Image (cartoon, helix red, strand yellow):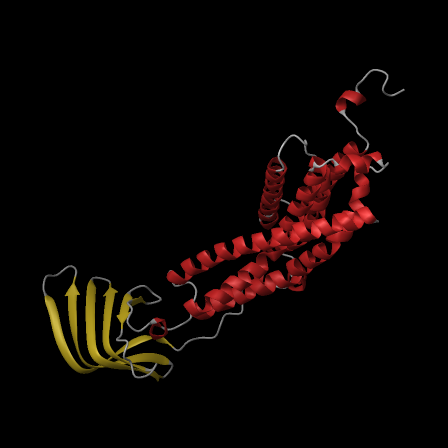
Length: 364
């Protein structure tokens, strides 16, 4: 019991430190990625922190699984290096006897991973997609930031308004560059206001000038106006109801068992199953030569994790494409991984080796 409590305390310290580091790294990466999306106009600048938070929340199952895996490998590697495992083996305990204390420590983490993957993952994806959809459904006027050139949703207009605008429905010193087939129009006005007429959004310009240039004809047509109206689109619609499979609840996916939905179910279940398999793999593969640094074991653990999750992604694409059924995918990947980890653990626990099995007289 003393050994169990000491190893759980060390695992808790290692797990906490690894989790903080990984969350910090992921948050930094997601912040850079979200800022890039905001600069391209895919995400509202005011929603950057929300999108980043939801993204990190959706990635928590993977972060927790990796933190647990690295913590177990790092702790056992230190025990091998400091010869604590030799004392454990000399007391009559085998390697497999370490599995119960590891599972007693890991089961709350595995439970959290299962809850996050089955419930929180689709909810976080739904929130992100709704924020993006609301931002994409803005009208051209809603996209304009005072004092900045801003492109319209269709890409054929560029707007600019003065920073000193009286209210959100009106503006001063307006500039509009519109490109259509075979012509380019530059419109400038002293002031403008936004009106909605019969479901259409109209921009009413006053005291301005228009310059029209045809790409296939020489010359410029210049006209002045006291008031001019231009249509800038329909009134903002409501958010769409149809989203991707990643945003649907697990029960909704089960109610509509299409290949894409089954692939998403396989991914969510796989996150929970992978957390358990990684615990067994960490115990089976964490043997370290005391003369070698612990970095080699951690690098091997990281490589194993990357290969495992890449296989999960590959299997998800196969299920989505109808090349593999969901039960076969789970049995082959996760069942096969567990069988491999259990076989390696049994071989190391019983000290099996090819040389001993094939030695003459070994069966006697």
